[in-house]
Structure formats: C-alpha cells, structure tokens
Image (cartoon, helix red, strand yellow):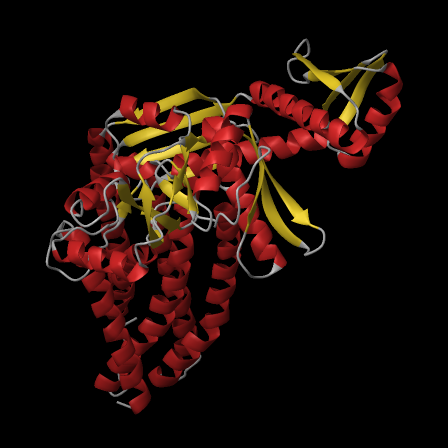
Length: 569
C-alpha cells in the first residue's frame, strides 16, 4: 500500500477511536463521579427524557403604564431644572389600556409652550403630546418606544429566567422568545413542576452589596483552591446556589464575619454553560434593594463620547444610596441579581440627589455600549418587574420519553436491517463495504452530538435515520458509476477510480442543497425543528466523509488484495 493510503487510514483510525471513546459514557451510562476521563454524554431532549414545557406571556399593558408614569417623573424634573417650571404629577389614564396617557399639571398656564418644547427637544420620537388643555399637559408613549419596550421586556425576562435555571440542575434548557410577547421554556428532566413555576415566575431580587476591598484576589483564590481539594467545585448540572451555599459554609472561618462569597459568572448564549466565574467578597447585610431603584437608562457622555448607565432612585432609595456611598467612598458596590454579581463599580464620591452614573471599563464604543445596555437591562429587571403569565404548560413523563426511545430504537434497527439486507444482496462484497461506512456514519454523528453539546430529540433521531438514507443514496451513486465504467470495458482498478471521481460532484451537489435547507431550519426553526436540523447538518458532513473518502479507502485496500483481478459489485 502507498504512503498516502496509510496516512488516510491512520487518520480514520484516530477518528474512530476518538468517536468511540466519546460515546462510551453514553452507552454505559457513566455518571459524573465516574473515573472515566470523558464526562460528557448525549443530552436527551424534552421528548426523550420527560420534563416541563411552558409558554409565558408578558403583560405589556402594565409595563406601558409603569413606563409612562416613569416618564412623568422625569419630565417633572426636566421642567424644573431646564426652565424653572413648577408642576404637579397627575395620574395615568388607562381608558385605552394599550395606550395609557399621563398628565402633568402646570402651576401656570403660560408655561405650556415651554413644557411642550422641552419634551419635543429631550424626548423626540419617544413620547407624543396627546393633549394641551389650559394647564394640563397630556402625553403618551410613541409606537417606537412601545416596540423598544416589548423587545427589552422579553430580553430581560429571558435574562432573569436563565439566571434561575441552574436551580433545577437542568443540563440543556431551552429558553427562547416566541413572537413579541411570549417566552418558551423547555426544561428536560424537571419533575417538580410547581417549584419550577414558582421560581421562574417570581419577581427578580436585585440588591446592592458593598465589596470587602481588604481581601485580596490572591487570598480568595487560595480559599477556592482549599475548597477544591475537598471536592467543592462547580460542575455542569449542579445548582449554582447549592454550590455557593456549600462553599460559604465550608469557608465560614476564613471569610470575614458579615461577608460572603459571590460570583460574577459569564454563561454561554443558552445559559447552560458557565464560561468563567469572578469571585467577590460582599456584605451579607443588604441595605439597598431594587425596590429603591426607579429607573436605569443608557446615556452617552457627550464630552468623552462614552456610554454610561444612569440611575434614578426613589425618595427613600435616594437617601439610602446617599448614606451608603458616603460611608464607602473608594470601595466597590456589587450589583447582584438573584445571587449573581453583574457589575461592581467603584464609588468615587458621595452621591446625593437620587441620581447616579455607572461608568464601564475600557474598550471600543460598541463593546462599552453593549455592556452598558446589558447592565441597564439587569437593573431594570429589578426596578421594573415584568408580570409573567403562564399561558400554556405541558409535562412529558419520563415513561413516555422512555417509550419514544425504545420505539425509535426498534424502528431504526428494523430500518437499518432492511437497508443492509438490500445492499448486501444487491452489491455483494461491495455491500459489506457500504454497510461498514453506514455504521461509521452513525457513530460519527452521535460522537459529534457529544462534542458539540447538542441535544438529541425525537425529530433528531429522524434526522439520523434520514442521514442513513442519504448515505445509502451516495453509495448507490458511486457503485452504479463503477458498474457503468466496467460495462465500458475498463479494468477494475480504473473502473473504481473513475467511478469515485465521476460520483464526487453529484454527491456534493445533492448534499449542499440539503444543507441549505437544514441551515434555514436551524436559523428559523424552534425546538424540535432545530433538533432535526442539527442532526441533519452533522449527518451531511459525516455522509460525505464516510461514503466517499472512507469508501474509497476500503476499496483501495480491497483492490490491492485481489490485485485488481476481481470486483464483487
């Protein structure tokens, strides 16, 4: 055999060994405590292992009312600061529930023109004037503002829910927006339905905690190393709150009294994988919560051209904030939502008046703007809770998922048996080669599911079955091309070589068109459709490799053994 053949064979052997080693934990059902070095297994979707499916709706009418009321307070301050116009806040008129209006009573009717001009100047496109009657100024939200509120409400609700999912120990949750006013949640393996609903639907808990600046980062790292030696580490699938509680209990004699460890964790887009965790030593005695916060907005410093987050506190919250900042100048204040530290800005001076600014770190304008938007989103999640309504709920029992797996298993085995029987009878020894490449194809697909952390669903199993069908089709194209070359009178060596070469672009064209459809399903589909698309796209890659490249590798070996004198096809 030529050196090139041995290189390709070595590569294939390495791929097979890697794939099999990745699938061992799944087939032998190893747990996390196993000594086997690979811990990842194929994640089963909601339809295969049971769990909870929920659709949550957002009550935008309440959000509109709260938002227009917030604008009323801001306009009152604006009139006083910019034009020394005195006014009194009116009430929200909800006669039109989807378009609430707010009234401001001016002390002087002559100030009406000034007030209207200021609103148009500072809130262009955000508000619209709906009434100017004597000294009563009426305004409402613009359509642009409503659309922005809808997007932010869905986004911040997803953010809050993602931050709580680890309470269930769910390894592959799915939390996605559906339309403009609904959120779909799938929690595979969850059994305590009522607890899940209670935890997901509750109001976000936002707190402001002072960071202990006397404890160095190196000291905290030594604590974490000490805990790690005792087996206290955060693993995928473990409730983050349980880890924090266990960690603080273990380190209670090391951590200063009145303080605790908290983390700023960065999670992946799905919210299931923790990419990094930055520790903070924060006060346990919380003096200021999200109840004291009125609003949080992203603004831009015109002189420095740098985004920042502007905070507005309620009266009681403003007094507390002034006291806390005065007592902790040059210290960090951790902003904590549901136990997760989102930011820890430095207190540069005592802040009075109920307004504060949080400046972000260094970086490009777009990077800082994104960080500011995310932080404002978190702050508003605590300051302006969104009411989530449970519109739909379905539970899938584990027995139903087990039945689905068993039926899919038997259906796949029966289907593969018929396919293998056909190709063995019709193509003889070449059929054995095709059967081998088909088996490798399925092994590679399942190994890729483990490697990518993808979730296997019932439609995903259908995608694997379709992959086998496409792989059979690719083998048939190759074999029929080889038969054509033999009928032309070419030698077996030449027939195999030309047959593979002539079939290559046909196979590529067929799989590219299928891949385009799969990409569309992956981008625009949801839930089970995405599961089907994932296995389909992975299967396309493995089909091309096993059917063409592995098939040709085995044929080269076969032809070498028979010295080109025979070909069973």
